[in-house]
Amino acid sequence: MLFACFDHLTAYEIYESFSKLNTRCDDLIDNIGLYLDFTNTSKTKFDKFCLKLLSNPRIKDQIRCLKLSNNFTCKQIDAFLSFFSLDEFSHLRLLSLSGINDNHLKMLKSTLSSTSQLSAVYLESQNSMNEIFSPTNV
Image (cartoon, rainbow, N blue to C red; front, side):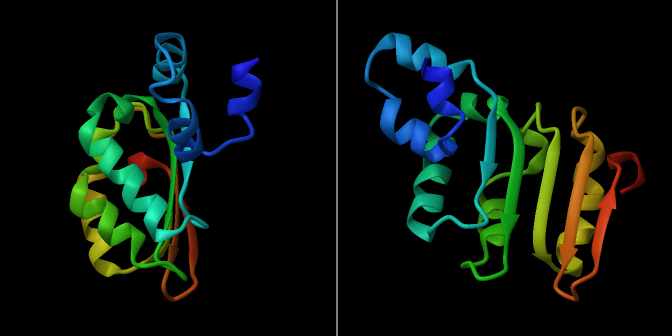
């Protein structure tokens, strides 16, 4: 029943609501794939979840999808990449970045080849050009 609830919550809400309730909930949370979409997340929640990732590196292994945006946010992509390298997320399958610039593209080219599970990359530049890359082509 908890997995059904988890389907309707963000990763932040799952950790905020169910983490540290009891060992059973902690075990369930530690074994689910996480789909992180920060595109409509407040800076406070974004920062709190980044701190949680820093304090518990095992969470990185659970992340399957990561969506970040610099559009209408406080430079999420820059903030996230200042804390983490994408190659730390060993099970990341989908990466979506909106509002990237040339510096991000250079960094991505050097990092994405070492992200072995990655199957799709969606990039939207500040120039509004949408591109979808296969990690082997980046």
